[in-house]
Amino acid sequence: MTGTPFGALVVFGGGVMGSAVVRGGLAAGVLEAARTTVCEPDRSKCAALAALGVRVTHDHGAAVQSSGPDAALLLAVKPQSFAELASQLHGAGVSSGRLVVSVMAGVRGERIAAELGMGVRVVRAMPNTAAAVRRSMTAIAPGPRATEADLARVRALISAVGKTVTIAEPLMDAATAVVGSGPAYVYVLAEAMMRGAREAGFDETTADEMVRGTIGGAAAMLEHHANMSPADLRSMVTSKGGTTAAAVDVLHSTGVPEAVVRAILAARDRGRELAGPVDSDD
Image 1: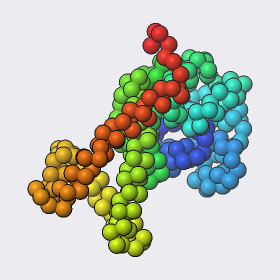
Image 2 (image 1 turned 180 degrees about the horizontal axis):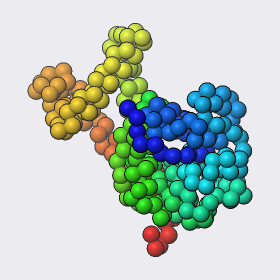
Image 3 (image 1 turned 60 degrees about the vertical axis):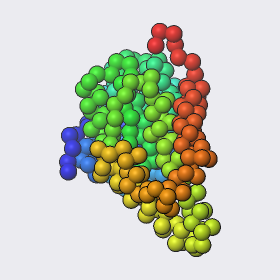
Image 4 (image 1 turned 135 degrees about the horizontal axis):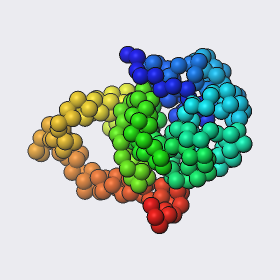
């Protein structure tokens, strides 16, 4: 299916997130290769990006200047690299009012707007690594000077790598804890299930296959039965006094559900620490 063209885009950072958005956007018809530029300093990643037909460069200034004054910027660098990137973009002459989309965790829209200057319009997005297989859940939040049209444009782009939900920016640290870090919680569960399967007598290959298939099937049930709560779905496989009930009793008695809640809140709090104090007028 062909989506609504996004227009010219310059992507800073061709790693997992940056390349996933480019690949997904091209596949969905939202991005045009001829109007997409990726700025990536790691030469080992450049060949794969160039094979997509997009322009690839190591020079931030060249990336901006060759893309035209209306090109949007996608910031997909590590948060600790933002200050240096902002300095280089200042030198490249970022045009006034340009749309800037950030997928950086822990970098608030106010900081992005302040360091880039020139009245940029900021939209933040928090995808997860499932973007690489176009199955991400992404939280999108309007930042300084972002318009409804900007949000619609960003949704069209990010929808190419999965589903989206729009939130207020003050909730972005919480969204990072749920959406951005969320796959890791599932992988911890998968690791434990595989270990349990091996201790129950299965070889490593069989345990791996069984757990991957089981988690994939459970995820499909959650998606397919959106009108049913996780508790409802759990009750479908839990008979009183049965094997599943014995397992669920252990999970509850050992505090697994509460540990997951605490993990999400810890991730949120760490995100707030990394972002720094919020201005009093926020």
